[in-house]
Length: 259
Image 1 (cartoon, helix red, strand yellow):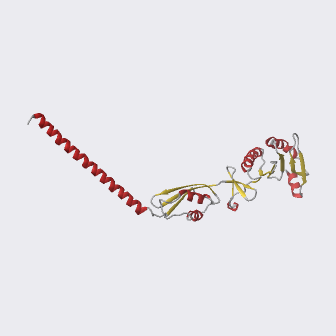
Image 2 (cartoon, helix red, strand yellow; image 1 turned 90 degrees about the horizontal axis):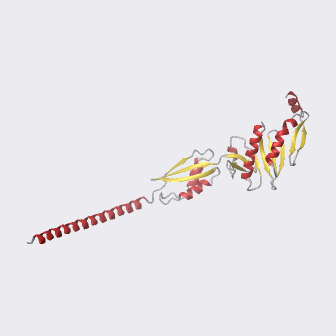
Image 3 (spheres, helix red, strand yellow; image 1 turned 45 degrees about the vertical axis):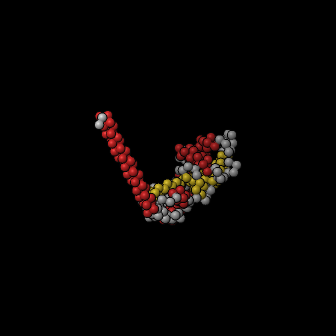
């Protein structure tokens, strides 16, 4: 046989074997993928009805009982791990009185983790609500609170403004050894303040901080009066102020004379 033809025949045989090997390898890969896909499908079928059996509460809530969280979560469909609506669970827990924010995460194979952040109550609002540190009103039982909170009053929607003003005034009074305990904002946005010594301040609607400072500046001289106690200080003037007095009780007179 001619050497050229012999070489061509060898090359042809090599190509045939390469083609056979390539096709065989491809078929093996296809079969493997089919078996893997079938196995995954069967695993999904077997596990799709896995139920939620464990709950982990994180965040150490102080006022929200874990039983209340569990009761809220049980309102959701817990029959399937995969089909559990995490956002629905989050809304259910979020509706609890003291809860500010919630994050919910599923942990394979049968657990959900709930991270709870509670409101931090800083003041009473209109007697029936509470304010958090962001000046947002929420409804919860105040008898669970361990400390006496200031009382703030105002029209709906003014919560943040009232709390911001309270913080400002509280700082001004604290520097001068006075304590602000209550604040009220009228429908016409006129401001009144109450101090822990019983004094009420009428500030009006403008220049609130300047008027508070005016009171602080003259308070030491007003306090020197021995026969009466300051009742109301009206600061709703461009300059000056008006003071209403109330008589001292016998015990108060004795204490003031000793001082």
